[in-house]
Image 1 (spheres, rainbow, N blue to C red):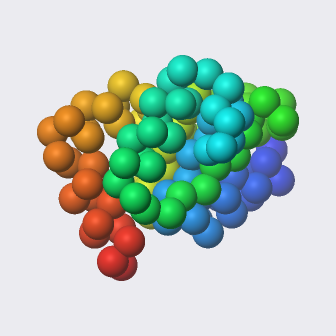
Image 2: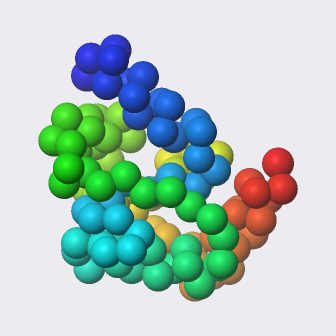
Length: 107
């Protein structure tokens, strides 16, 4: 990964409390997994930003290396990688996601 690409991803992750790298955007997800993540975060009623990896091949590949995670979507909370669709569903069902988001937004 180039230093420039790492800086671009760092910037997106750091400037947004909740950042989702996904296929499509929060208004029009382009895959079921991305849609699952959007629906979960919408249920929490908190602000979040998305980045459409379909529009930027460099970030689409780079984000996988950045997180050491092979799939998209990828969710970041307060600059930390949380996981993808399955992990978010699991955390939401256990009530863990709501707590983490509340703490992150309060900080």
